[in-house]
Length: 106
Image (tube, rainbow, N blue to C red; front, side):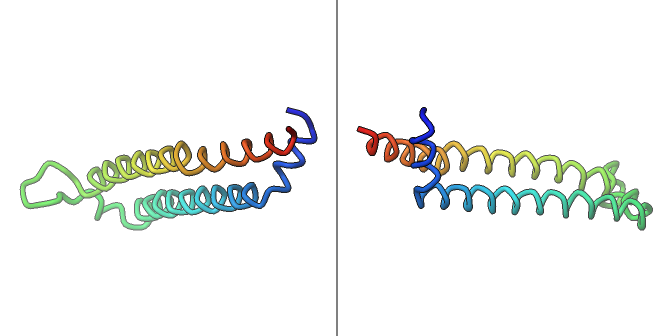
């Protein structure tokens, strides 16, 4: 693509909408992950005995192990959420922006 098309892309209000939506979504997911991740490590640092307790009477699973497994699955689900939205809404909006920019050159 030529620099003229790139300029048209950048001036398109939908491009700014895409950048804003994608950025805020990525920052929100990043904040969620970091808060949970560092919160877990704070728990390890300040209350390690609680994490070693079994989930239930006679259970071999400790609270810490269970929390870690839930975090692992939750982070995968957040990744799936991001990929679905990126491949859906964000890609559709990108294709629309490119199509509009190419129409203007013809």
